[in-house]
Length: 190
Image 1 (cartoon, rainbow, N blue to C red):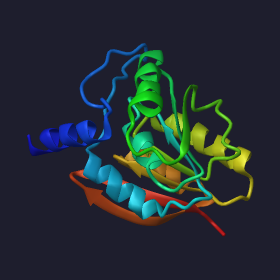
Image 2 (image 1 turned 180 degrees about the vertical axis):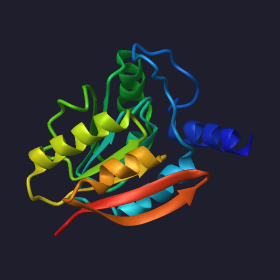
Image 3 (image 1 turned 90 degrees about the horizontal axis):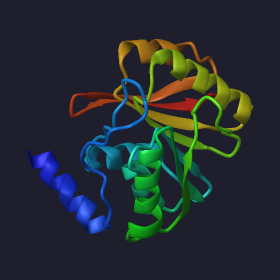
């Protein structure tokens, strides 16, 4: 109850609408996000800088992108597979968000085909099945090469953890539980 009230307060203060449920075209998929305080803690752990290109993979209504766009980053974007959610997230970021600092964009894009060349930081809130996660991480590695990269995965389940452990180019830099959600921050190996 308290989280719902606090999330509404944040939405109102930021001028956005990121709560509720939206029917999507994605089989077995639906919109879900975590609360603002958890997202803020995760973004803080990612240590965003003015050189960062931030991407929320499976951005939903754009709650995380909106918070990132209020920080000193080069850009804050999101990709989403649902046209309905892309429309909402775009309106939140481009027309409603108060206090926006960074450039940003929301794209209707499949995470397995997106180009991650410029992405330095990614945020994932359990956006897809572990097999797809493996494909996306392999794609990020191919697109980024040996350039630095870090990401946060929120709601890390054991099958997701197995996929991350197979990524020899990433190391776990932090791991904690936030309101019953397992969170991990990964960084590329230097």
